[in-house]
Image (tube, rainbow, N blue to C red; front, side):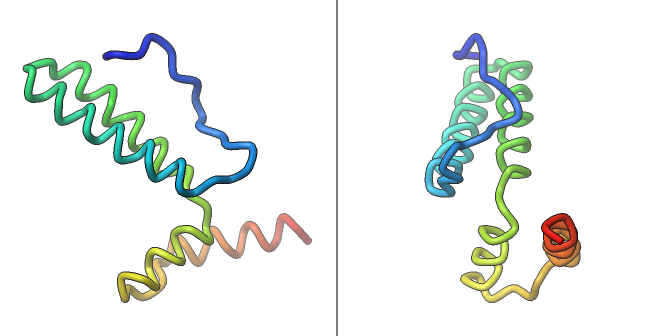
Length: 89
């Protein structure tokens, strides 16, 4: 793995979805590079980071992606939106 320390969970102070999407792509590219170099352990670490980053997407971001791709709302997205609304009171 190329980076010695990547803090988890991934948190952006300004909730910048574009920066998060950049990281998701970067982690995926690093994973592919590691596999190409025969380093399965590093590839799995990059994949784990990518999964965490994907899980960090906001409900609004996921809903916008679903709409843009013509997908119906995912049950988990709907449930997450309900939990966010309940938490806000």
